[in-house]
Every structure is written in C-alpha cells, then in structure tokens.
Image (cartoon, rainbow over the protein chains, first blue to last red):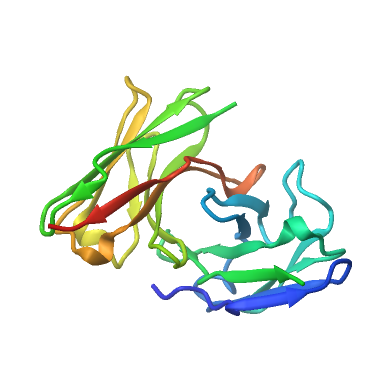
Length: 110
Length: 123
C-alpha cells in the first residue's frame, strides 16, 4: 500500500490559520470516514488530534479541525501558536483491513 | 490511565529476527473492543503501520510486510509481541506499540502509544 500524500512542509505566523492536506485513493481516504490526524514533537510519540475525519478527542484545542472531500482530507489549525510547531501525520483505514499513514508535514510557526 | 511500554533488543543482525514486546498497564489487554498495533518510524521519516492483533487473537498485517511479520498476544502477561523476520538495514526504526479503538460509538483511532524503542539492524 502506498503512503498517503501530504505536503512536506507548511508554515504560518502566530494567529494565522494553516491547512494540511492528505490525499489518498478510493480504497482508503475516499472509501472510509476513518481519517485521523496525529501531532508529533521531536523525540515524542504521536498524539491524536482528530479522528473519524472531524472529531476532536477530549482535551484537544478547538483550534484544530478536520474535514474531507473525496479522496482528500484536511487538517486546519486556526490561531497558530508556537506550541503547534511539530510534525503532523494523517492516517486512514483501508480496504485491506489495514492502516496507512501519510508521509508527514512539518509545521513551522514563523 | 493506560500505559504501553516496548521492550526488546536494540540491535539485531541482518537476516535475523527482530522481536519486541509491548507491556500494557492500567487495564486488561483482553477487555474492551481494542486492537493492539505495532507502528514504526525510520529516523527522519514517516510512520508505517506494521500490523495489529485483536483480543480474540485475530490479526491484520501491512500487505508490504505480511510475509515477514507475526504479532501475538499473551493475555496472562498483559503483553503483545512483534516478530519481524529476515531483517535488513531498512528495518532500522523506532518501533511503537499502540492501542487502537475501532467501534462505531468511540471511533477509529490510536489513542495510547508507547514511548517507542529504537531498533538498529547492523552487523
């Protein structure tokens, strides 16, 4: 299975909004509403930020939101803060009863 | 509070079998509708899902690794394990264990992760 496609990097200034895209196929992103997003700081384990396309776990800021259209899912972070600087990974369930991750996007807060 | 901890050799020789164990604390591995997964991350690269095991013992594997992977569970020790055979340098990575929730009510996600353990394949 091929990794989902994410931009290698995005950047934004504090207070701004950014969007990270995650493109797959009809066998993963397009076929299931089981897309999740993870935040990873250097040397740390990933942390769940969004699940099932647009749901936020308890404790995650409402500045984080998710959506999906066709084979592409998106993560939007509004009101950027310095602490949001991290790597972000999308993940989708697949028709092979497996999970596939995106290649990751490095978010830089300018 | 559920906690997961990986353990195993940090160095494995090429062509040998990588073996890791994940110990779950703060809850029983056999209770609830959970899958238990292994995920890896080569240095500076993205995450790769390796496979999972359900509490019943049923497994699913990444198609690209399926021929080399075995995941098992030992409910008496509250542990699950990974074996990856015929390793090469390309299998050098930080290996994470994680709990997967997959229900219509609670969603489909990895909610708890271990801290990760680095496994280097080298002679």
